[in-house]
Every structure is written in structure tokens, then in C-alpha cells.
Image 1 (cartoon, one colour):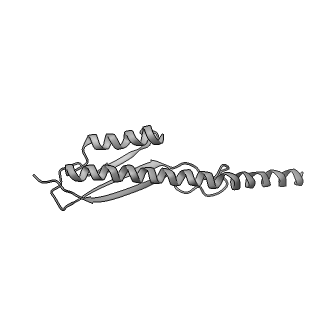
Image 2 (image 1 turned 180 degrees about the horizontal axis):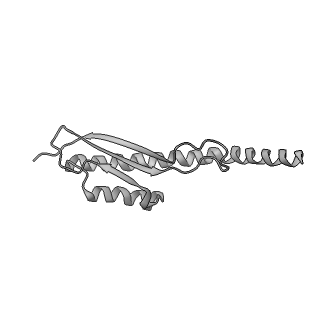
Image 3 (image 1 turned 180 degrees about the vertical axis):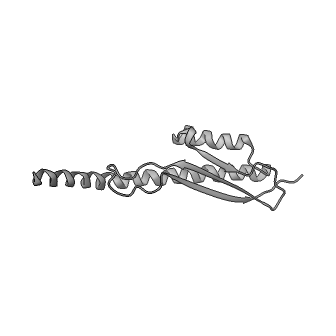
Length: 125
């Protein structure tokens, strides 16, 4: 009995060791994708003076179509009123985070991650 238990415990650890680097890499790619989408949206918003609904929809659409995020779980908070030049526009995106370990015997960390940005407005009346 103890040999079987030992083999099963070893199997769980080996499976986690095998897949953790790949899953961690995927997690880092998701973080980078969110950061790129947020930065590109901020560039567009700086010209407009605020995050328009079209910019926000475009950011969500990019995350859904190109990076396979669930649209219902994406939260975008942003400055929605026109901001004059040389004042900051802020935005943040919060998305669900994938798992790192196959077997949930270790701390997986937070369920979501959030990226924030702050950019100066270039909007002139």
C-alpha cells in the first residue's frame, strides 16, 4: 500500500514539474498580450482625449479574437470624459488568469491579473 501511495505522490509531482514551465510561459504571454492591447488603446485615447466606447470595444475584441479570452470576464475601467492636453488619462484591464500547476496542491496565486496605464492627453479643443 505504501509503495502505491508513494508512486501516486511521485506521479503528481512529476506531472507538475513537467507542465509548470509551459503553463508559466503561457501565463506570461497572456500578461504581455494584455499589456500590448492596453498600450495600443492608450495611444489612441491620448489623441481623442479619453477612452471612447469604440476604443474600449476594440480592445475587448482584440483580446477575445486574437488571444481567446472570455469576453464576459474582461473588465476595462478607463477615463470616459474628455481630458484637456497635458492631463493624465488612466485605464486598467483585469482578465482571468490561467492555472500554473496541473494538480491543485500548490498555491496557484490570484485568479485574475490587472494591468494599468496612465498617459498624457494630447486633446486640444
